[in-house]
Length: 526
Image (cartoon, rainbow, N blue to C red; front, side, top):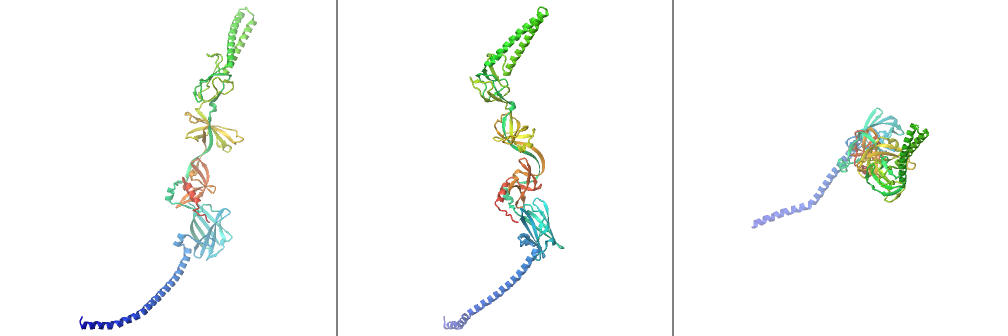
């Protein structure tokens, strides 16, 4: 670096240093001023924004008031405003109507409070009517009458309180129309939830219902084909070829006994036969002699009388043996008595052993023809009018899937003093022996058949607050519908009140909806 260059650098430093010092000394002041200016500008903008906000609030308030009368979009979404009495407030212009659903004495009624410019007006100066549309499509017209400071519905509003409502108002010369919906007690379930929970939907419709009566019973022996076998004569048991459970044919030997009584009867018969033979010979001889005028007529008549007496004695001896069921003669001796089966059947009881001494009136066998049996039914006194001879019956075993059909053959005319029941009887064919005496059964009797306008599956009926009800399918869920039931056949139930044909109800799995209702997810408020 030469001398000239050094002098130039020094000159530049002399010029720039004072200027830099001046700038450093004056810059803070300028910054503070800038900040103050910025703050001032910000303060002006904030104040301006506040003023705008205040004006906007006034406009919003105006819009809110206007919305009360014209039911703008916001109010359609949120529903009518709340009134001073906790009801729904409907407004249009300066007219207002607060509607309250109030309960008193166990029933609910609508109360309508008219107002103008926010002040109550006399109810008799306003006419109000309402149309309710239920989920099943039923429409109900509701009239109102002045009562104190309100207009009160003239009829009670039945539950469920789920409906679309249209209110028609005539205030002086001005008509008004308001709409609202109520979904009190709705059980919300989506289609996916309904399917996942196993709930099926059925349509209430007309059906033919055969009313039936379910009664308990028991299988018994057919007493018309059951015999209690007695020996009829006393004696000693010589042999017992029949065993319990054995099937026997008519006339087959059940047992053989040795009886002195039978021996005496057979001896008497043999003697009577001999006397008859002798009397016949004598009668023939005396008749011949009297014809030839050899003997007197008196001898002939006496021989005739002796023959008749001998024949009577023979008939008497024969009848005695017949009454005992014994033959006139036996290859095994006069005292041998064969006890035989009176008909085809099964030995169901046996009270006889070899060598036993038995009396003439003791039951030694019970024989029953099990090709038919009786189903004896216990009929309460209140149901006797429904049980008729000839009525169709279905008998089901309680311990097996066995089932058979038959007809009522007998209805008892006496009622037990203690049980207050009567006995009815169904005769059942039993070719396979499946119906065993002593088996408990359930008997279904067809009592009547009728065409009903509305019926639902039995599983659709649930008990809500000790009353029968169904769950109506509505968009987004179900609502409880109290009903009155009629006849039932075990599968379908007649609905006499509370339901119209064509509506959908929860059938199988409706208990799931009842459980949801019990959780209290749906609030009850008026």
